[in-house]
Image (tube, rainbow, N blue to C red; front, top):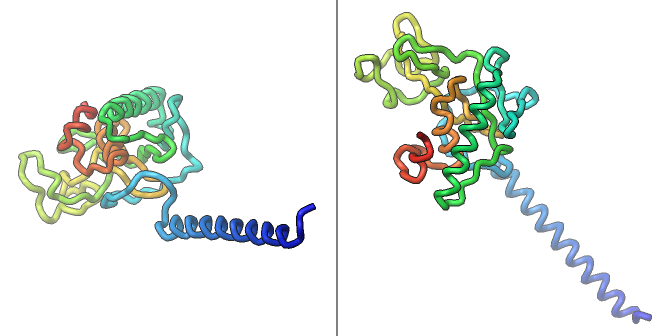
Amino acid sequence: MIPPEEDQQAQILFLAVFLLLIGLLLAATAVVMASGCTPGYAQNFQPVTAYRVAMSMAKKTPGGVRFIAPAKDDTAALRAQLDAKTSALEKCLAQAGAGWQVRRDWFVVLVPPDWYISACSGQQLVPSTPSCRLCIDQKGLPLPAKCCGLRLPTKDCPCVCNMRAVVQPGQPPAVVTAPDLLLYKAELARLVTGVNFPWGDPRISRCLK
């Protein structure tokens, strides 16, 4: 039979440990709430798109890549290319030995319904507002100031600074891309590695070919 004194001490110790665990749990919860995010990739990117990402509309490719696309673009070819490009990048980044992981549950691919083909470049583009320093006109010259910051081409500005693919911060972050997926790997690499210009890092640039 356990003496009353020892039984009381055991109860006090159990209560102390229990309260300590509760305190640690609350502290961890507070940190997550203060950061405003759930576990995932760092998102130190300037937002240049503001699409609504309705995860209730998301589908999955056979390889597990979550994506949202209008019916006209949701093809077997699109799904196959998403899987092929994602897997190729995943395999290549793993060889870099930097601990980069392509977590398919940490991002979604968004093909917006209003992508268009540029009359200036002939490329599939996504309406967006990046810095005009990133773009030139068909003559290789800087865009006119009046054409900077426009989300879509106009009659006076047929050439505007729009992206072929771009990371849109959010929960989850979205790789917004035209359906040709021309720069999908580059933007996914930006998100996964946190390197803003992956073409300038030899460990990553070799994965973007």
